[in-house]
Length: 499
Image 1 (cartoon, rainbow, N blue to C red):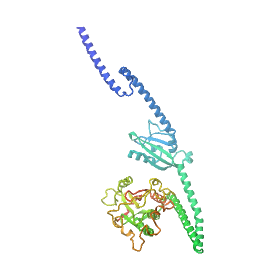
Image 2 (cartoon, one colour):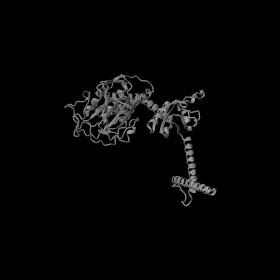
Image 3 (cartoon, rainbow, N blue to C red):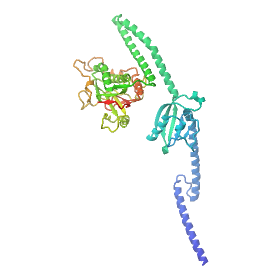
Image 4 (cartoon, helix red, strand yellow):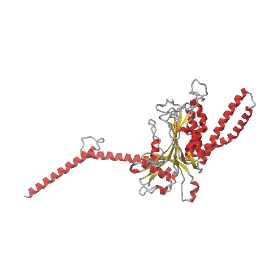
């Protein structure tokens, strides 16, 4: 009886062992499937194969650890700063250059990370981190960082510095920030601006003297010599205008750091005033203004600066527009979402309709949009990033052949005009000279592309827009083929009136 019990127990044990071994073999084969690309010779047992595969994985893991250390060494000794924060904006790690740029005294502890704002008082940096995390795509920003230290002995070393930050979204809502010290470039730009301003001041007086002498000789010389004096006066006037533009640009940049007076200005009336002053130039080419927008728009602006902005934009549009074409000026109020859609407009798409501020608009306006569009040759793609740089002038032909726009279905004036347009239109008369390639009236299609200015007009426009807290962009209009200047100003007044 005991033998039977022993044999029964042995059988049960063997069955259990066999079942356990089968399960182990199945699990082992399942594990080996993950290493099928690195498995040794199949003639070995599963246990031997697993042992060799584990050894190989340990080797790979060591190599990965070595690569991580290499990357950490590269980041630590990189000439630009790098810092990394978690989902709660706590500093996880930063390299040596970031500590220097941000004035971080304490070594960040990965075990007990601290809030970044406790170590670095830079709300611009914190805002860049939040924008990068919310957008889930890279973001960049520029600002002037003012280091703060509790050590009185370091007060002389706490100089403000210009920084450029590049945010990169990481996993688990972490964010990495690359920091670049742009102070040297800012210093070079300041020295360049100061040199240009000083040079303009030095040239202003002798140019005025030369012009006075030339004008004195102009009335005393005979006709053959008088033509040379006329040319001298014209060139002197051109140089004087260039010098004055340099002085104005330097003044704008200097005053941009200070508060300037804002007062309620009717933007529509200001556009009308500027167009009236430029209308004689437009009449020579039979151009008219196609205004689209409200009849009245009162908002706080610096009237002198916005007047200069409109003069530069409309003068450029007149200069490069072919005859018998309108110059479009569109004014509207848009919400943040609509303004963002306009910024990302595809050149191949039709422009969005102008949305004026009405009670039916569910979102309050946050942006004043001013668009100036012409039918000229437009900008070359290679010139678009630089058109607002001082002294930059595009290729004389603007490098892009303009295709004639399709004006089918438009009014006899070329474009349909909305409220308030009629008082801006330049009415043609029978006494005005019609444009024709057969008539010698001082203009020709070949001469148009070669007209140009000093290369400071759009630079002054950008500086005026920046001084108002806005931004300006340039592109080519998808329908007209001409230049499309977009001015965006923040809507800061709740008392602005539209009619």
